[in-house]
Image (cartoon, rainbow, N blue to C red; front, top):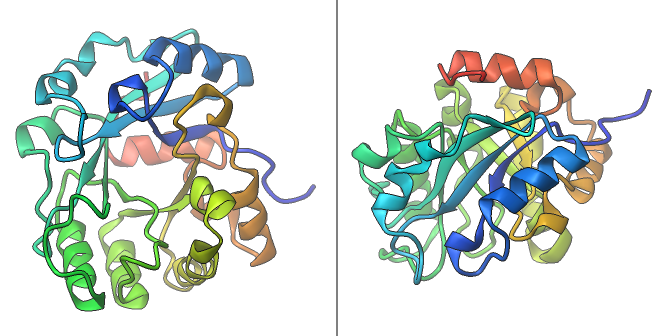
Length: 244
Protein backbone atom coordinates (compact mmCIF):
# COMPACT_ATOMS: atom_id res chain seq x y z
CA UNK A 1 0.00 0.00 0.00
CA UNK A 2 1.39 3.42 -0.99
CA UNK A 3 1.16 6.80 0.62
CA UNK A 4 -2.16 8.48 1.33
CA UNK A 5 -4.08 8.93 -1.93
CA UNK A 6 -6.71 11.42 -0.79
CA UNK A 7 -7.99 13.38 2.17
CA UNK A 8 -11.25 12.45 3.90
CA UNK A 9 -12.06 16.00 5.06
CA UNK A 10 -11.27 19.38 3.54
CA UNK A 11 -10.94 21.94 6.32
CA UNK A 12 -10.30 25.10 4.29
CA UNK A 13 -12.88 26.01 1.66
CA UNK A 14 -14.72 29.11 0.48
CA UNK A 15 -18.21 29.77 -0.83
CA UNK A 16 -19.64 32.57 -2.94
CA UNK A 17 -19.99 34.53 0.29
CA UNK A 18 -16.25 35.23 0.14
CA UNK A 19 -16.93 37.20 -3.10
CA UNK A 20 -13.87 35.83 -4.90
CA UNK A 21 -15.17 32.23 -4.69
CA UNK A 22 -17.79 30.86 -7.03
CA UNK A 23 -19.99 28.16 -5.48
CA UNK A 24 -22.81 28.18 -2.95
CA UNK A 25 -22.68 26.19 0.26
CA UNK A 26 -25.21 23.73 -1.19
CA UNK A 27 -23.12 23.27 -4.33
CA UNK A 28 -20.07 22.53 -2.18
CA UNK A 29 -22.03 20.05 -0.07
CA UNK A 30 -23.35 18.31 -3.18
CA UNK A 31 -19.82 18.04 -4.61
CA UNK A 32 -18.48 16.73 -1.29
CA UNK A 33 -21.08 13.97 -1.42
CA UNK A 34 -20.27 13.20 -5.06
CA UNK A 35 -16.55 12.75 -4.47
CA UNK A 36 -17.01 10.83 -1.21
CA UNK A 37 -15.71 13.32 1.35
CA UNK A 38 -16.52 12.42 4.93
CA UNK A 39 -16.53 16.09 5.95
CA UNK A 40 -15.57 19.60 4.98
CA UNK A 41 -15.47 23.01 6.62
CA UNK A 42 -16.97 26.20 5.26
CA UNK A 43 -14.35 28.82 6.15
CA UNK A 44 -15.18 32.10 4.47
CA UNK A 45 -12.96 35.13 5.05
CA UNK A 46 -13.23 37.49 7.99
CA UNK A 47 -14.66 40.95 7.54
CA UNK A 48 -11.46 42.97 7.04
CA UNK A 49 -10.94 41.50 3.58
CA UNK A 50 -12.78 43.59 1.01
CA UNK A 51 -16.31 42.46 0.21
CA UNK A 52 -16.47 39.61 2.71
CA UNK A 53 -19.34 38.70 5.03
CA UNK A 54 -21.00 40.69 7.75
CA UNK A 55 -20.53 39.11 11.21
CA UNK A 56 -24.20 38.04 11.15
CA UNK A 57 -23.29 35.54 8.44
CA UNK A 58 -20.98 33.64 10.79
CA UNK A 59 -23.38 33.90 13.72
CA UNK A 60 -26.11 32.27 11.64
CA UNK A 61 -24.12 29.39 10.13
CA UNK A 62 -25.88 27.08 12.57
CA UNK A 63 -28.81 27.26 10.13
CA UNK A 64 -26.92 24.74 7.98
CA UNK A 65 -27.44 21.20 9.33
CA UNK A 66 -24.40 19.45 10.79
CA UNK A 67 -24.86 16.60 8.34
CA UNK A 68 -26.23 17.04 4.82
CA UNK A 69 -26.23 14.41 2.08
CA UNK A 70 -24.19 12.20 4.42
CA UNK A 71 -21.40 14.80 4.73
CA UNK A 72 -20.37 16.35 8.06
CA UNK A 73 -20.42 20.11 7.48
CA UNK A 74 -18.25 22.11 9.86
CA UNK A 75 -19.08 25.79 10.26
CA UNK A 76 -15.95 27.90 10.34
CA UNK A 77 -14.04 31.02 9.38
CA UNK A 78 -10.70 32.05 7.94
CA UNK A 79 -10.05 35.00 10.22
CA UNK A 80 -7.39 37.51 9.25
CA UNK A 81 -4.49 38.17 11.60
CA UNK A 82 -4.36 41.95 11.65
CA UNK A 83 -1.29 42.70 13.78
CA UNK A 84 1.74 41.29 15.59
CA UNK A 85 -0.31 40.83 18.76
CA UNK A 86 -2.34 38.15 17.01
CA UNK A 87 -5.53 40.19 16.98
CA UNK A 88 -8.12 38.98 14.49
CA UNK A 89 -10.94 40.49 12.47
CA UNK A 90 -13.43 38.23 14.25
CA UNK A 91 -14.19 38.58 17.92
CA UNK A 92 -14.77 35.91 20.54
CA UNK A 93 -18.55 35.98 20.11
CA UNK A 94 -18.09 34.80 16.52
CA UNK A 95 -15.22 32.37 17.05
CA UNK A 96 -16.89 30.63 19.98
CA UNK A 97 -19.99 30.05 17.85
CA UNK A 98 -18.09 28.05 15.19
CA UNK A 99 -16.76 24.51 14.82
CA UNK A 100 -13.42 25.22 13.16
CA UNK A 101 -11.45 28.47 13.14
CA UNK A 102 -8.50 29.26 10.90
CA UNK A 103 -6.16 32.22 11.32
CA UNK A 104 -4.11 33.46 8.39
CA UNK A 105 -2.13 36.39 7.07
CA UNK A 106 -3.00 38.28 3.89
CA UNK A 107 -1.23 41.33 2.49
CA UNK A 108 -4.21 43.73 2.58
CA UNK A 109 -5.19 42.93 6.15
CA UNK A 110 -1.97 42.77 8.23
CA UNK A 111 -1.40 46.27 9.55
CA UNK A 112 2.02 46.06 11.22
CA UNK A 113 5.40 46.11 9.54
CA UNK A 114 6.00 42.72 7.92
CA UNK A 115 9.21 40.94 8.94
CA UNK A 116 10.27 37.68 10.58
CA UNK A 117 9.96 39.14 14.08
CA UNK A 118 6.44 40.55 13.67
CA UNK A 119 5.15 37.42 11.93
CA UNK A 120 6.70 35.14 14.55
CA UNK A 121 5.18 37.20 17.35
CA UNK A 122 1.78 37.11 15.66
CA UNK A 123 1.79 33.33 15.28
CA UNK A 124 3.02 32.76 18.84
CA UNK A 125 0.11 34.87 20.06
CA UNK A 126 -2.28 32.89 17.86
CA UNK A 127 -0.99 29.71 19.53
CA UNK A 128 -2.43 31.05 22.79
CA UNK A 129 -5.87 31.72 21.34
CA UNK A 130 -8.19 28.92 22.53
CA UNK A 131 -10.59 29.42 19.62
CA UNK A 132 -8.10 28.96 16.79
CA UNK A 133 -7.59 25.45 15.43
CA UNK A 134 -5.14 26.06 12.61
CA UNK A 135 -3.03 28.55 10.69
CA UNK A 136 -3.36 28.51 6.90
CA UNK A 137 -0.94 28.79 3.98
CA UNK A 138 1.93 29.85 6.23
CA UNK A 139 4.55 28.98 3.61
CA UNK A 140 4.26 32.45 2.11
CA UNK A 141 7.70 33.98 1.50
CA UNK A 142 6.19 37.40 2.21
CA UNK A 143 5.07 36.44 5.73
CA UNK A 144 8.12 34.40 6.69
CA UNK A 145 8.48 33.57 10.38
CA UNK A 146 10.73 31.57 12.70
CA UNK A 147 9.39 28.19 11.65
CA UNK A 148 11.10 26.18 14.37
CA UNK A 149 9.95 28.36 17.26
CA UNK A 150 6.34 28.59 16.07
CA UNK A 151 5.93 24.95 15.07
CA UNK A 152 7.34 23.76 18.38
CA UNK A 153 4.83 25.99 20.21
CA UNK A 154 1.96 24.82 18.01
CA UNK A 155 2.84 21.20 18.77
CA UNK A 156 2.80 21.97 22.49
CA UNK A 157 -0.59 23.70 22.20
CA UNK A 158 -2.23 21.08 19.97
CA UNK A 159 -2.72 23.52 17.09
CA UNK A 160 -2.64 22.46 13.45
CA UNK A 161 -0.38 23.70 10.68
CA UNK A 162 -2.02 23.61 7.28
CA UNK A 163 -0.36 22.09 4.23
CA UNK A 164 -2.15 24.14 1.60
CA UNK A 165 -2.56 22.46 -1.78
CA UNK A 166 -3.28 25.70 -3.63
CA UNK A 167 0.04 27.14 -2.46
CA UNK A 168 1.99 24.12 -3.65
CA UNK A 169 0.11 23.82 -6.94
CA UNK A 170 0.07 27.46 -8.01
CA UNK A 171 2.90 29.23 -6.15
CA UNK A 172 6.33 27.68 -6.74
CA UNK A 173 8.01 30.15 -4.38
CA UNK A 174 5.97 28.69 -1.50
CA UNK A 175 7.15 25.09 -2.03
CA UNK A 176 10.60 25.19 -0.34
CA UNK A 177 9.03 26.84 2.71
CA UNK A 178 6.18 24.30 2.78
CA UNK A 179 8.71 21.45 2.74
CA UNK A 180 10.71 23.01 5.56
CA UNK A 181 7.55 23.55 7.60
CA UNK A 182 6.43 19.95 7.04
CA UNK A 183 9.82 18.56 8.08
CA UNK A 184 9.71 20.60 11.29
CA UNK A 185 6.20 19.31 11.98
CA UNK A 186 7.66 15.80 11.87
CA UNK A 187 10.54 16.82 14.14
CA UNK A 188 8.22 18.25 16.80
CA UNK A 189 5.22 15.98 16.31
CA UNK A 190 2.99 18.85 15.21
CA UNK A 191 -0.15 17.68 13.48
CA UNK A 192 -1.20 19.06 10.13
CA UNK A 193 -4.28 19.22 7.95
CA UNK A 194 -3.91 18.90 4.19
CA UNK A 195 -6.46 21.25 2.65
CA UNK A 196 -7.36 22.65 -0.75
CA UNK A 197 -8.35 26.26 -0.01
CA UNK A 198 -11.06 25.52 -2.59
CA UNK A 199 -12.75 28.49 -4.23
CA UNK A 200 -14.87 26.34 -6.56
CA UNK A 201 -16.30 22.83 -6.56
CA UNK A 202 -13.65 21.47 -8.94
CA UNK A 203 -10.98 22.13 -6.30
CA UNK A 204 -12.80 20.60 -3.33
CA UNK A 205 -11.04 17.59 -1.81
CA UNK A 206 -8.34 17.50 -4.49
CA UNK A 207 -4.97 17.75 -2.76
CA UNK A 208 -2.69 15.71 -5.03
CA UNK A 209 0.18 18.18 -5.08
CA UNK A 210 0.32 18.55 -1.30
CA UNK A 211 0.11 14.81 -0.77
CA UNK A 212 2.88 14.21 -3.30
CA UNK A 213 5.12 16.67 -1.48
CA UNK A 214 4.47 14.97 1.85
CA UNK A 215 5.16 11.56 0.33
CA UNK A 216 8.45 12.87 -1.06
CA UNK A 217 9.70 13.83 2.41
CA UNK A 218 8.36 10.70 4.13
CA UNK A 219 5.73 12.50 6.19
CA UNK A 220 3.92 10.16 8.64
CA UNK A 221 0.21 9.75 7.93
CA UNK A 222 -0.59 9.65 11.64
CA UNK A 223 0.28 13.36 11.89
CA UNK A 224 -2.31 14.23 9.22
CA UNK A 225 -5.62 14.75 11.01
CA UNK A 226 -7.66 14.35 7.83
CA UNK A 227 -5.84 11.29 6.50
CA UNK A 228 -8.56 8.88 7.66
CA UNK A 229 -12.02 8.98 9.18
CA UNK A 230 -10.56 7.50 12.36
CA UNK A 231 -7.89 10.22 12.66
CA UNK A 232 -10.38 12.94 11.82
CA UNK A 233 -13.03 11.81 14.29
CA UNK A 234 -10.37 11.48 16.98
CA UNK A 235 -9.35 15.08 16.36
CA UNK A 236 -12.96 16.28 16.52
CA UNK A 237 -13.42 14.45 19.81
CA UNK A 238 -10.26 16.01 21.27
CA UNK A 239 -11.50 19.47 20.28
CA UNK A 240 -15.02 18.79 21.59
CA UNK A 241 -16.45 19.30 18.11
CA UNK A 242 -19.63 17.23 17.61
CA UNK A 243 -19.09 14.26 15.31
CA UNK A 244 -22.60 14.58 13.87
